[in-house]
Image 1 (cartoon, helix red, strand yellow):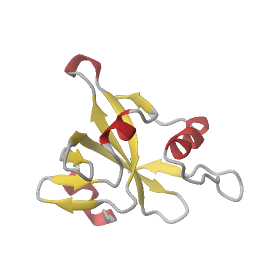
Image 2: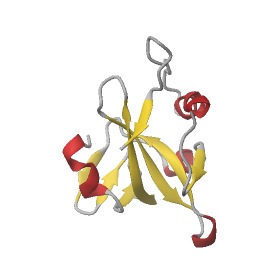
Image 3: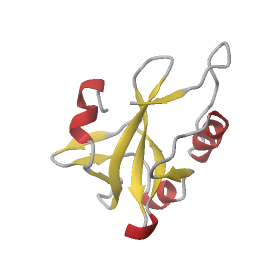
Length: 118
């Protein structure tokens, strides 16, 4: 799992699936607002003129020299909800990100957002 101290170190490294197939490049990390622990990464995918950022959970992710290996298949990640390379994840777009990976979504006790970019 990526630790908070490692976030900046892994930016711009390859993100690969369990078979070692490259998905894209790690752009940023979103932390769980309840725990401040890394929860999702945004991964740059697409053609050079049509880049977008897709979300992938960091649960069970491992790091190696120059890569972050996620527990999800490349095709599933590439089909995940995305934002533009200069975009931000809107609060109402959080539930679909969790749903894509069949993960439970629950906002904070007072309706707070679940994810914050670091």
